[in-house]
Image (cartoon, rainbow, N blue to C red; front, side):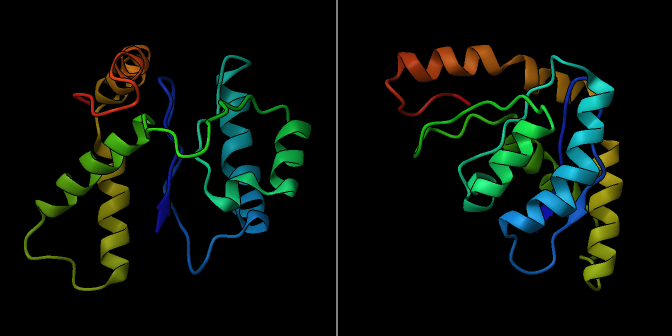
Length: 149
């Protein structure tokens, strides 16, 4: 599993998560070294949009996010996944699958993932993020059902 963050101004490096991601690991390996510096670079308008995965919702993580003054978008449980990062993962997958032959090992796969992650044009990421308002409007119009996104 890899973790990455995107914004209209920057993207974090991809982070390879080895093993199970716990709340403590999420805080120590992702939030502290990757999210907080990104938020400091972006400024006060930055919003963390994670999902309701157990590591993201632990009491320790919630406390850390408050203390670090990270603005977080709250999602209801079992909400439609409108997060633009999901489309970034799709794009990353398409780009890596274009490599032939397939990666020979995990190290090569991780290298290709980082290379392709860095190669996704900023305009593509900005379009994903700027589509959030319309994604939400469509989701509401379809009562949480299927949308074109």
